[in-house]
Image: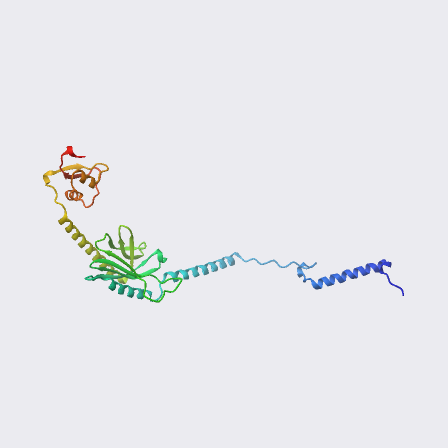
Length: 293
């Protein structure tokens, strides 16, 4: 039996090698993913991506910005605008609290609906009532509804502010928010409080301001009358001399120096406070100059 040896014939050996390579390429092509058409030899390049015109890009940008601004506006409105019925509920609760706050023989002279906006409440409006009684100025308000959680069931938490008429404060009608609103401005030596008043309650707010001012004047007159009855009498007029205030001197120091009291010096010179200025002429009790310190 004859054995065929391809190596014996060079032509047959080359043909067998080409067949083997073609078979391997066919097997690899069957197992490997198919190449994109444009990567094959002779294939045309893909078409270039079409660019948007500047007007189209501008329109898309404006539409996106408008959507963002609209969403932000809705969120801000939900945070600032009170829920439906919150104003009426808060005012009813505030009026009930005012009645419970009144003491014996205390009565309401004037009242007006008002509101406040505090930075601690993210400038959300809290509604209440400001009241002038025969003893003090009173404000009761309900804080705004929480944003992140619903208000728990139970009695409404109320803010109560009380200002007795013998304390140092003023309540005057003023324009608020650079002239865009009206209200009552309460000033104390330590702080300033604004009460926002709508047009329907403006007349009532003026009555509250007038009642508060009248009560404050009455208290001041009573205090001055009481002070006059307990004040030490001044020395006879013949014993008064003129004195020019020097730098660094105070009314208390001058009273000690001239062996008197600040009340006497205020009475002699018709002073409402203890403030004196350098070069000011004062009437002081006459004493022996040699014994002055």
